Amino acid sequence: MKNITVIGAGTMGNGIAHTFAQSGFNVNLVDISQGALDKGLATITKNLDRMVAKEKITKADKEATLGNITLNTSLENSVDNVDLVVEAASENVQVKLDLFKKLDALCPGQTILASNTSSISITQIASVTNRQEKVIGMHFMNPVPIMKLVEIIRGYNTTDEVTNTIMELSKQLGKTPVEVNDYPGFVSNRILMPMINEAIETLYNGVAGVQEIDTVMMLGMAHPMGPLQLADFIGLDVCLSILEVLNDGFKNPKYAPCPLLVNMVRAGKKGVKSGEGFYDYSQSRKAENVSSQFA
Image 1 (cartoon, rainbow, N blue to C red):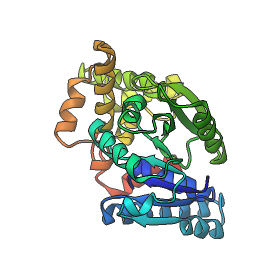
Image 2 (tube, rainbow, N blue to C red):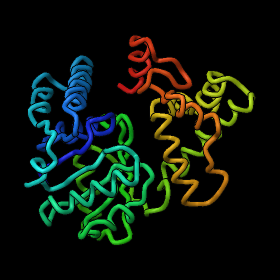
Image 3 (cartoon, rainbow, N blue to C red):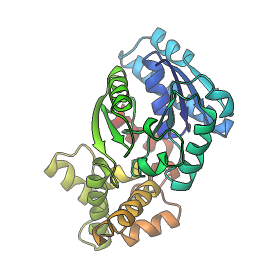
Image 4 (spheres, helix red, strand yellow):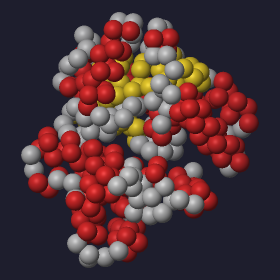
């Protein structure tokens, strides 16, 4: 496997492209917006510069990584000779179904199609293709270049061969892959999102303030970041989408999103990406300082 296409230049997409390119793969980073591609490449460059400054990589490593990345707004021109596609589009069922149907028609027969979805069924995504055995989940963690875990999700028809190939590929990226089965939220978000939701409920019920809740979880439970700040970094809209998938999949009220979360997303307060969530990121310096925890 040498040629990789990553679809989506947002936070997860540019991080996935960065990781593959730094490991020597040829990467096509695809987005419908040239502006999004330019912003994604700028983020990759900034993160590489930070790694150079910390002497984790050399300047030559940085240039080699950037040289492995090609930007493209045309999906058709990015998948004609590709071994693996990793989709990192928005966490929306219909968007993913439409995209995978199109990818199935455009990609060579041997191409493996992977989704970075954090909660949506891989089996459902695979069902719109004629290669269900070659569809799999590769759920990277944010920030992708730093976090070691990759959750590998088998769809109902995903073969052992494809699963083993993606497990080994993840190891080549310096990651630790963990194989899980295809149920709502998989493992990571089935456990994480109810905790975040309960933290929001605790705030909503007036038990304690934002900083107090996060401090208890950081100092008392040894979490590197409090659940409310983590929700800001994930994106409150993403948290809401995942909880809705869990709630729909399990029909259990414990997964019902807190009304406060729903209202914040409706009001456009989505966390770091919008400049405000449970914390205020409107000052670029403050946001940069908070983000440096990931570096």
